[in-house]
Image (cartoon, rainbow, N blue to C red; front, side):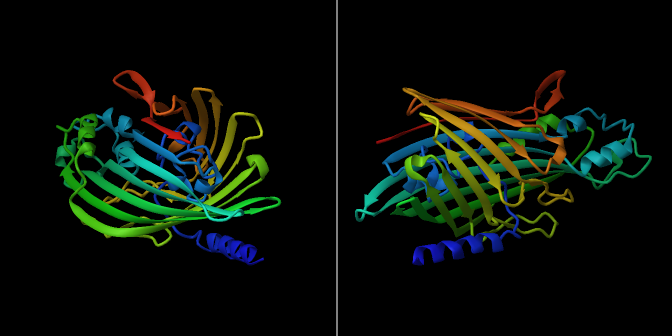
Amino acid sequence: MRFFMKLKVFSVLFISLLNLSAFEFGYMGNESFGMGGSGVAVSKSAWGLYYNPAMQGVDNNFKIGYSFGIRIKENRISDLSNINLSNISSVDLLNDILTNNGLSMTSENGIALQVPLILTENISSSIGVGVFYTKRSVINFTGNINAGTTNIDNVNNAYIVTNRLDILEIPVSYTMQIYSGFGTFYLGGNLKYIYSGHSADKNKLDSGVAVMDSFKDIFKSGSGVKTNTFGVDVGLAYAAPMEYIVIGIVAKNLNNPKLKTIDLGESQNLKLDSQYRIGISTRIIPLTTIALDADLKPNYEFSGFNTNISRNKVQYVSLGAMVNAGVVDIRFGFAKDILKNNNEGWLISGGLGFGFIDLSVFSDTKLIKVNNSKIPSEFGVKLGGSFSF
């Protein structure tokens, strides 16, 4: 009875905190990356430590995994590159682009370890530790061009702003599982050390700038202003017998860690505000996991910081599947931003895993035109692997 009272209080806590804002949910590890991002209720993964610490107990084998990857996302930069800045034909069009654009890169890399513990016949637990490094970089072009202006060189308030944020997380987790006659309940938590470094540049936008060539600046180090802090994640899960149904819910960064940043003249603060996501999965089909995840509230993209550009909100729903076909795992999935910002398409993903060697990719169905060729507005790739016993 005490457990169910705690469960009720825990659920109320989740609901009461949904008015906070946050960065978008990440894609650490290969399994969930290839399943559209679904991972909050996926047990056959070494990355429960990241997506939902409670999931470490659902499949509490010894697990180890590693993953390295990169994602690139474009928002109207291709439109800006098609404008002749030394002979501006439409100031209104240029101003519209300068209020909503961005070219971003996200690199998520990590190592995760899970170790099972047996306490009693009806109670067992798992501990986990990880090292997660995420690099976020974004370039924004900003300004307000007066009517009648034909050359950007005559404008004093048009800029290229580059922000780079490096975050290192070292979480230590503990998961408790309690068996019952109608399924098993899991409660898990992470306490994590967080190191961050933020750097930023602000340069004048002129006619000599090759817009697409500015892309190289996002790969520079973000080690300008440093922060040492900590974060707290909490997860809850329920698994029916035989894992026919698994339900998970997670709250990340409950303490809203604050990060020091370089100020380029805009009064903005940067912090890792809380994220909330719910997931459900089923293994009713033999050798197959089908998973659905949904953000419980909008999150902010890392874009527009230190500029007058509004930061876009995103709220994703994802659906994915993983088939364990003997020596190979086959994954596929898709995700959609239900806020439909920037007229984004669907994110389609897939992956193949051969144990300790694993490759996953994803792509947006929205295409942009660059140098007379059409490419996805967002794409990503991850190389990694994992094993368990």
